[in-house]
Image 1 (cartoon, chains in turn purple, brown):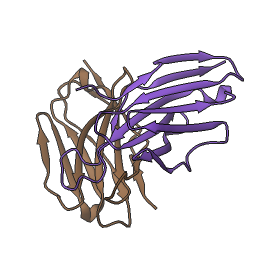
Image 2 (cartoon, rainbow over the protein chains, first blue to last red):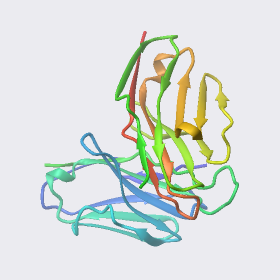
Image 3 (cartoon, rainbow over the protein chains, first blue to last red):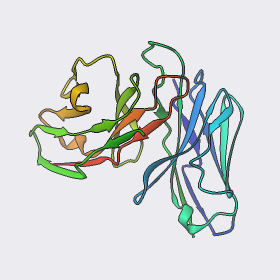
Image 4 (tube, one colour):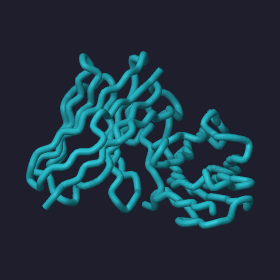
Length: 119
Length: 116
């Protein structure tokens, strides 16, 4: 089975440009999470969705960041305008939430990440 | 508030030594999950194990073993006969409760280096 798919794997852009990161969760999973990882702050949860609905976006750093999940198999994280301090690895993860007792329930599986560099 | 503490920032051992990575957590929930993830130098995050708060049985998987003790709020991870391929950053994590779409709180990670 395919795991979580993220694209692009690497993105280099200039300050002020719009950046869109994409994620395809594992088929059948109903929750999707966006994380950012930096040396200084470690792994930070930015936002997560359940059944395509945003549940908690308290981790989104500021209005320049937005995320959507138009359907169960696709999500985007957009940064507009981008700044050098946004440089990080962005991970998408998905899980099957709410399946009580199941081995797979509530375990987040991560994509390979997108390494973003903003010059 | 939930919190996960991995006090060991970096550990370096010689191959074939046993090594234990410590994890201490804080939560007011009575039902929760604990996790360990591995991040090798290639950068991906690999799920290793999940335990629920009602199951304190230790678990062994090959050279890996996990010791969950609710009395001390710890979920430690031991690698027996370490190998160079075990070199990675290891994250301990805690879920918020046990319901739909639970958030996971990650520790800061322990960087493990295995020297040949």
